Image 1 (spheres, rainbow, N blue to C red):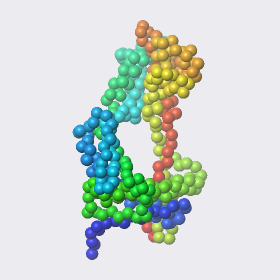
Image 2: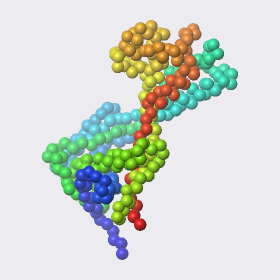
Image 3: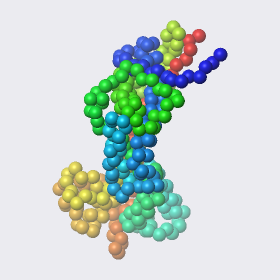
Image 4: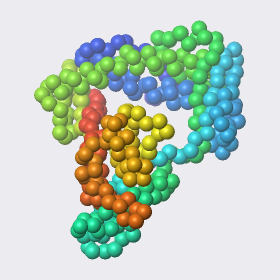
Amino acid sequence: MPYILEKEIIELPGKLTGLGEDDFLGYLGWERKKPEISKRILNQFKKGACLFTGYDDENRPDTKVENDVPAGNLLFRVTTVPVEKKISYSDLNHEFGRYLNFLLERHVRGKRQEGIVTIKGEPYVSLDELFTKMKQDEKTMRTGKTGVSQSLSFLEPAELADKIPKRMAILYKRDYSILNDYNGRMYVMGKRFIEEGNRNTGDFKQLILDDSLQTLGEEPRKVTKLSYPFEKFTFVNSIEPRTTTKHANVVRSLFAEPKERITKKSRIGDLAKIRMIYREGAEDFLREKGLLDDDLLFVYKPEIRGDAILVRLYGLREKLDHYRRMHSGITIEQNIYMEITD
């Protein structure tokens, strides 16, 4: 007959240094139990401390505010910062690519399009059009929320922060959001407990990845599963290559504005450089700083028509593709799990 559990005891994992059965069990056990500490103790106590300040997403301070929060004989500090929605560079990158494809398609079909000029049979687009498009998208393509970001830090007694328990008990019926001495101590020790557990198990995932790649002889090009059989259990390491792109770097490679002080290490977008050259006469200055080469002007082939600075649409598309490749890389995702050995 089953019975209701009233608590869970979680042991601190030892240092994992190999690929034995105990190492696999230790790693998987820690990954399964660790979130319970965060969910039931850390997050709940932080919730109570943040409520103490009176600030939330609906009641935001104008600037950063720090509030000291007592919990029995312990003292904590909640830092509250107002936040706005962040620019989604992934959306910006993809939308800009779609926009260029739309302009090119209009040109191929012989359709007139505002901001597009045909020069020597090639479509050109004005810088003003491009910068206006990007600024409009930056206003609308945002993620996250408008509200507050709150962090909790422990102040005193300082010696408590040095204690690392060997095990922790989660009491299922206890309300850890109440700001008392016991809950405060559980929060502080829970943070240290997780930090130490992560240190002890942190090398295991890299160990099994190195071993799996050595077995394969090369990085996989598709999802690949490797089996580690033992007497009672078989452990599987499923590895998957994924392409990740630093979308912000792609966008900035084209549009980043110059800072007030320009040095050899300054990061200025291609289109901003072209605008500096033709509106400020900065070509020699940029070359002296090592920020301009002949390739940029060759690919974009800028032209002036009235007050407008124009660049080759095909050159811009080429550069966008180039920066997407440059700022992309392959990462290996791992999923380690256990099966019962037949």
